[in-house]
Length: 231
Ligand SMILES: C[S@@+](CC[C@H](N)C(=O)[O-])C[C@H]1O[C@@H](n2cnc3c(N)ncnc32)[C@H](O)[C@@H]1O
Image (cartoon, rainbow, N blue to C red):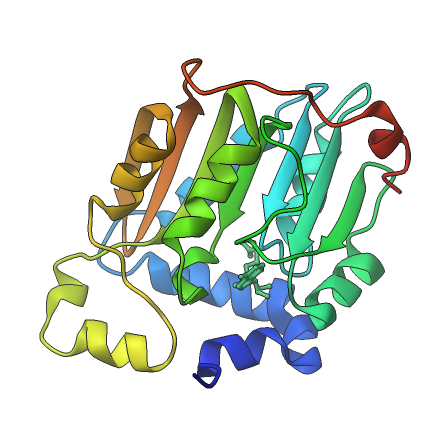
C-alpha cells in the first residue's frame, strides 16, 4: 500500500522544519473547533508533563522533539526524556533544535520499540496515533515499555458531533488521518493492562492518561549506562 499524504508530509524535510512553530500551533487551534480550549488543555498537559522529577520518560512519535525537550526541561537528577520517531527529517530537526543534556533521539517504529518491558516511568504519544495506519498495536507497545505503576499519556483524535457528519471520517481517512471512536483508545489501554484511565475530550481531540496496573509482569528498568549515554 502506498504512503498516505499525511505520512509523506512527516518525511518531508521542509515540513519537519516548519512543524513546531507553524503547523503544530495551527493544528492545535483546529483541534479546538467545536469545543472549549484544546489549546488550554495542551498547556495544562505540558505543565503536567514538565513537573519536576527524576523520571525516565519516553516520547513516542516525537516529531522534531517539541515535547521531548519541554518534558526534559522539567526533569531533575538522572531524569531523561528519550524521543523516538521513524522519520529521519524529523529526527534531524530534533537534534538541531531540541537537543539538551537530558534528551536523546532514536529512530524506531512505534510498533517495535527497542526497549525492554517495564522500562519507563512515563510514556507519551502525542498527536501521532491518528497518522499511523495500524495504531492499536502501538498502544500495546506504549504499555509494554511503561513500568508497573508508571503512566501512559496519549493525545489523539476522537469522533465528535462535528466529525460524525457523513463523509468526514472517510475524507479524513483518505488523507491518512484517522478519527478514533470514543472508546477505542481507552478500551485498548485497559486491555493492555492500564488502570485508572482518565479520558478528556475537548474540541476534536482526546487526552488519555492511565497508570499501568501492578498485575502486569515487571522487569528490569533501563540500565544506568544507557541513561549516561543519553546526550
Ligand atoms: C504530527 S507529528 C507529532 C509530533 C509531536 N509528538 C507533537 O505532539 O507535536 C507525528 C509524528 O509521528 C511520527 N510517526 C508516524 N508513524 C510512526 C511510527 N509508526 N513510528 C514512529 N513514529 C511515527 C511521524 O514521523 C511524525 O514525526
